[in-house]
Length: 143
Image (cartoon, rainbow, N blue to C red; front, side, top):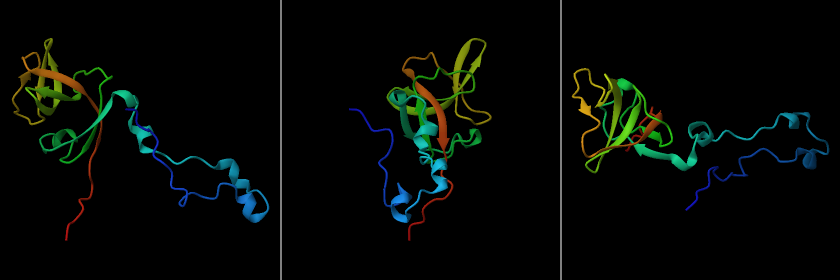
């Protein structure tokens, strides 16, 4: 199924399409009218290979990924040393940092004395590279 990349526009919130019809003359500002910024255009380079995850833990906060962050994951990006990646280990989705030492690839969870997992272990497959972490700044307060 194909998905629409640009969200539909709410014409009630848009400025007048042709102000000349209302006022009788064209506005000089019409030369500067621009489309609205759609956040997807900024965050997504390859829509076909882009997926979204929600971070369920706070274990990568030291790397700038907060709990409940929306992660933009691109499968077309090649992971390299220091990349935050999404992996599947024995059916469980994990977000880890990739560390390359001496030709070996390890996964770490961002803690200073964290356990390193050798990526070549059976059952670990790299899904994609996190290209953006959209961290929540305000939590909605439920009354």
